[in-house]
Length: 553
Image (cartoon, rainbow, N blue to C red; front, side, top):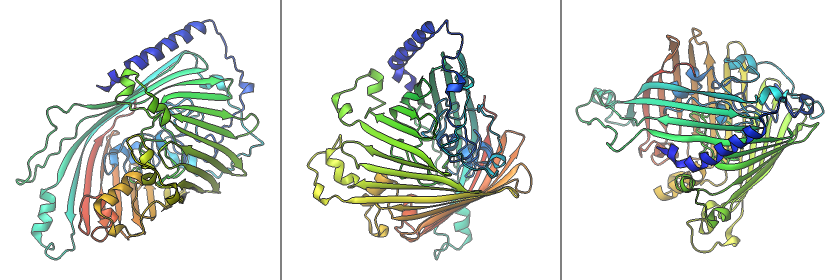
């Protein structure tokens, strides 16, 4: 169990908590009056105080109508069993913000009472506040002194996927080919749970941890005599991890510190976010609302009184969590390969602009720019990234690298993305689109060898240059308990892509049944056919899932 991995770290943290409790036992009121706290509390979706769970007007449930009706399924409907986590990785109860854009963060009991229906909150035509008119927030209501909270969620279900490879190929247009697709269907049980603890002994101090559990996923083939049932190996145990653990400290409501492992929202993109180089994983376009795993870091947020400007600073030591945190053994290389990042955010009329940079020895340094805003109901967002050299060129200086770096061969490399979101109040329809240019990608992905293709995928998540993603979601489809969505992504570099349709129906309050087709298209050797683990020219699949997910506790 990985909980034993941080016993020493927990002992130190708990000792500090006890000391703070003792030192503040006689405090009877908030040392920082609410009048001194003038940080912003805007209802606009693109202010500096973005909430992890309400970025596009949602609540602590997922973007399109709650976790059960998530755009691409969430934990209940997700094509590949994604999590039920909140939009852009907000924690269950994030005091100072699970993201860089959120001062206090969303929780299961959102302080400002976010609705479970995102459409009611996102369709209002509101103006973004200007820097000259910040709103005041009652800090004493947020820093609940002496409070203790615990909660979590649980879900169990089964998924089945029927797949036919190259359905239009000569020789595949017969009854046997169709029957084989049904007979070889895989049925996969899915069991997931998470649990969090939130301790706030004083008005200015907080300790938070969140654990996630996921049972091994045996795969059954009940319809086929040709395939054997596959079970977890006898040595395989339940997968568990401390997904987040950190302490927060507030200095005079002006400087906010967070130390530990936590999710960071460094970019503003929805399907693609090249600016986010801090989290340990990239955005999954098929499940963009899933919370991503963050790194261990020291985050400092500085707010400027009388404005809505904000400065974010990060120190990210290169620590092997599996090894070094267990024994608190950190060597000098961890200091040498420590990463540093910073970003300054400010408002210009109704647009929030962020300018920053990221540096780590042996990695491609990056300058980052982000823009978010709205034209009435149309929300827009964009990211620009300028790197110097490729990851492969800098690799000799990396922790496991060797050799010399030829700076003369290096040049500036550009990445950029832009997108929009528009929602119609009636009939509760939401359209999201985003374009992504990847300057690190190759212009001819079909000519890449398997090794070169995997190098690009591992370094930049995408092997090509140009990508486009679109989604269309409809709430209350036929009835209030049904929803539908269409999603598609295409590589404009080689013409390959995938399209997915999902219909979801909720019944008996906590059960959700989802089904829909998945089409992967492209020529042999194109990016999306390679991504599916199949070297042919495409495939057609049909997914069916049933999930039981009771309310969070």
